[in-house]
Length: 164
Image (tube, rainbow, N blue to C red; front, side):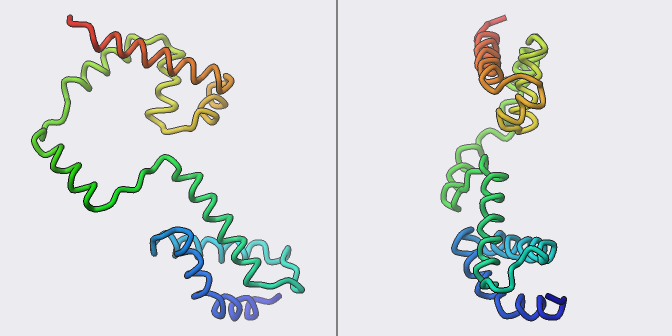
């Protein structure tokens, strides 16, 4: 398939794919990003496309895979609606300084952790890695990493509860 034919197919299917992506994603910006990424992927894999197959079906498959990838990458995000954000703002408004003292104390407690526990906390909580990714990064198995995190949280809890 040549570039012109691909461009024509994209033009013909763009709005349908955008509607499909909106149904998956729920938001227009994410849907547009999914469709754009799907077009790039389709162009890069055009040689694998069997022209006897339905182009729209092939593209929906790519959009669906991009959606799954998006969900994996954003699995830690929790969507909040406007009313939830307003309630959160009302709750936090009386505390403009935040909890600086508790976070300073937490930093002191973290400095006292053994290196393996500190590395586990850093990889999972500071860097946002999944337990599997962090375990691989730290060259331990995932179960050992989760146990390390559990123990680190308990040590921190005890440290924070002490009245020095």
